[in-house]
Amino acid sequence: MKIRKLNSIEERLQARRIAGLAFVIPLDMEKEEQRFSLLSPDSEEKNVESWGAFLDDGTLTAGLCNHHYTVSFDGHRVLCGGVGDVSSLPENRRQGAVRGIFSAKLREMREGDFLFSYLYPFSHVYYRQFGYELCQQPLRQWIKCQDLLSLPCTHAIEMQNGAGCFEEITPLSHRFMMRYNLGVLRESNQWNFVSGDPVKDRKLRYLFRDQQGRLAGYVCFIPQEENGVRRAEIRDIAYEDTPALLSILAFFGRLSAQYQEVGGALPPDVDLRLFAGEPYAVRQERTCAGMGRIVHVEKVLSLMRAPQEVGEAVIEVEDPFLPENSGRYRLLFENGAIQSVSRTELPPDLSCRIGDLTRLVLGTDDPLVSLTAPGVTVAGKKELLCRLFPKKNLYMNQPF
Image 1 (cartoon, helix red, strand yellow):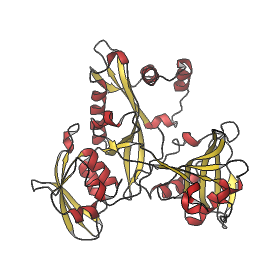
Image 2 (cartoon, rainbow, N blue to C red; image 1 turned 180 degrees about the vertical axis):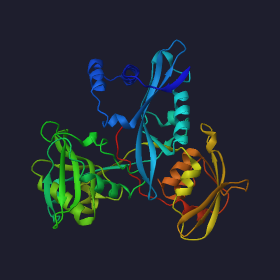
Image 3 (cartoon, rainbow, N blue to C red; image 1 turned 90 degrees about the vertical axis):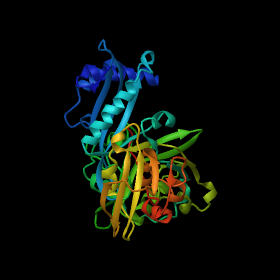
Image 4 (tube, one colour; image 1 turned 180 degrees about the horizontal axis):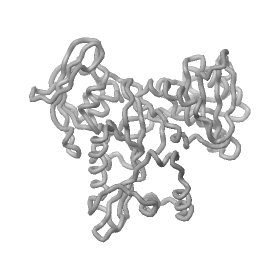
């Protein structure tokens, strides 16, 4: 079996067909061929590479796409691959095709300075074999629009027309996403999920300007209806400060005659119960979403935030799928930053699998929870480890 990147439009169309068969989704292959042939150099596809596995007779039997993103990690801009369209022909499964693609892809990513890989799984159990682990459990929440009528709206509101117009909101989005681990710092061609005409495509975007006319917030949402309830589902949002957030929410209060509820998977530090007269009326549901994995352990540990003290810890990592990451790492830190990361034979203070370490460095949970996971062993310095791996805000809000 041969593993390589897909280069021609014909090969990528074959991969799309395999994805359609695997996920049982209708695809018009003539339209797909037309779409690929019309792609411009600055389209979203320029940030996507396709991989495939070929049988000995040259048949493409499995494929996936790897989207290139810049994301935030503890205040740094780092590279993260977004994996999608993982699929294989049903008649050729269990022959190692997908495993082979992941092995080749992750090694190339490691050599190319990618620090993380992320995906939205059909099965968490399946992707754990490749070192991925549950990273994000977003809180989907909905509030009645009429409960927002009393909030102050101190900003001028402006609707964006047309499908584009993302140049102005991109800097604000980047500043906002730098607050969260795995926040995607989108390039100009990575806005397709909210791009569209407000009338034709029913994708609405509103800007919020302060008294000096500066952009202080924006929100992108779509109308939807379920069981007779009309909702405005927020797909993307960013704001400079609390007054801008209040203005965005107050705007939806003004739409209470059109929408009964507003909400969605909002940033993790927004709790809509605080804005409701009756918190019982706010519906909240915690869901399991994406899985992630560290691609390069040493580089991730070197960029991680550290306690405001002088200290050290030895972390032992087991990564059977990417053994280049396996080993013991000695971390020396001071004044909130990692000073050095080196391989060592010293006894570990913490031993864990690569997926558990991914959760720890991203700060997905309270450390008292993360450090008691089945694959984690704490041999010493538990209080220090709790300070080294605190809970952090994580917000991957990019479909792929």
